Amino acid sequence: MKSKVLVTIFSLMAMLFVSNINLSARSYDGQLIYNPIEENGLMVGQTVYKMGSNGLHNYMKYNYKYDDNKRMIESETMKWDGTNNEWANDLRINYLYEGKSVTTTYYKWNKNKNSYILVPEMTVTMDNTNM
Image (cartoon, rainbow, N blue to C red; front, side):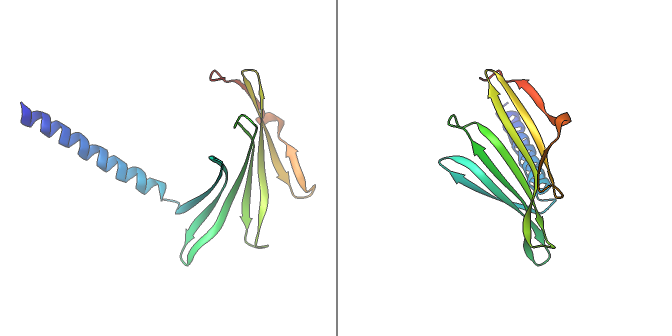
């Protein structure tokens, strides 16, 4: 009886080990490396690098802003522009908290206008049951 339990436990551990290896391998498929930036226990940004044949290269950059209740109020995404060797604005999401509702408003960067433009079809209001 004890040996049957031990075999079952060993088999379960082996399955978990193999699935963990698969998950780890899958997360490196794109060869992305994440470098988070934290302040006062909150992630305020992160830079994502892509592994190339001759090292790491800039890929994406994220900046986050929070309110006094430590709720995210803005998330900005930038892409690396290799031609101009600089970060280029891409997307900004604003979060508005009203009572138990959260509204996410999406803005896409417009190069011609040099500003973010509202994407109204992406704006969503949801009830947050955790509030």
